[in-house]
Length: 68
Image (cartoon, rainbow, N blue to C red; front, side, top):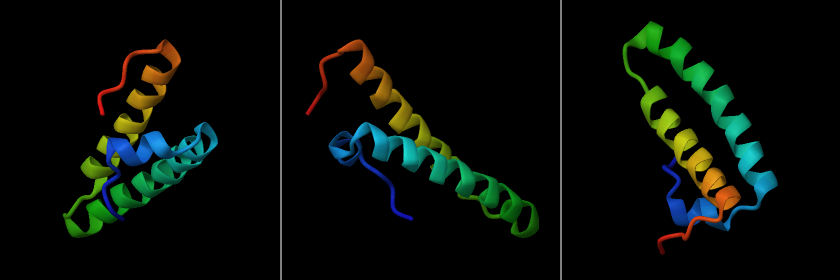
């Protein structure tokens, strides 16, 4: 999985963002299970992507000016 940049997330529709969050949450659960077995973790990266999407969703709701 590649890291999603803010500009890529802004191009997504609200529905796509919601689907992506659900997808990432499922992947986060799998990553946490995998971490306990191997010791390597992608959980931190997944959490950052989820936070980035939620932040942009909140900015859209509040009407905050977006940096381009």
